[in-house]
Image (cartoon, rainbow, N blue to C red):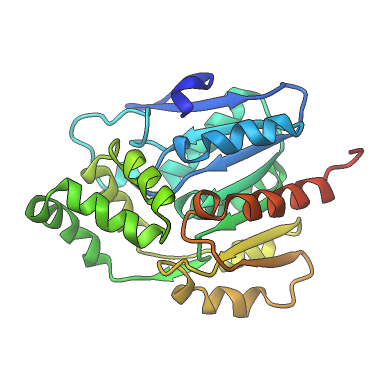
Length: 273
């Protein structure tokens, strides 16, 4: 768990943003950024693994998630893509790292996609899983989340989310444990902000290595990937690796395969290693 890893806090406006910084300062840096309703805890075991292979690892807790703060009277604007993405640049600045291998799961990939045009120099490589580069979902669906939460109760909501995230019991239990920390208002506001976006041009404009890890069991995202794959097909810097047993959080239910794919990506593009 990340509560056993080094923890730092930065402040942006009313928000205190938590992140873990693990490994040797001189090593190449990886950022492992979680998705909606999750936290850096999702990657705690991965942080130790990659640190043992010669990498420094940064695990953000996105605003309102994990050990990052949730102020009173939060609004939808507080959880806009630009605001949440700016937190991540502030973390890199605070950690004094100029260039990172970025790995984003779901929302963690969306936020990084939004940053590519202005901050491409900060990304040595760019990897996502559980992330579509564009999405056009009904915005009103997120508005129903609080009512659903009140109607069936948080335990059933957590159960349903875990079931939709993975088909494996161990991963489902981990997801349920992580979900104990989320705030339904944070999830609702964030979901409304990411219901519709299109960052395909951002990916096309990024000329460094891009890897998409596509989980064969990721029911949440694979249906939305058609437009992304059509646009990225044939791009010389883009590679897609299919992991048959991977779910939405592929690092939890296809851990070995995901780590091998990431190590290959990092090592291939590390100069002097």
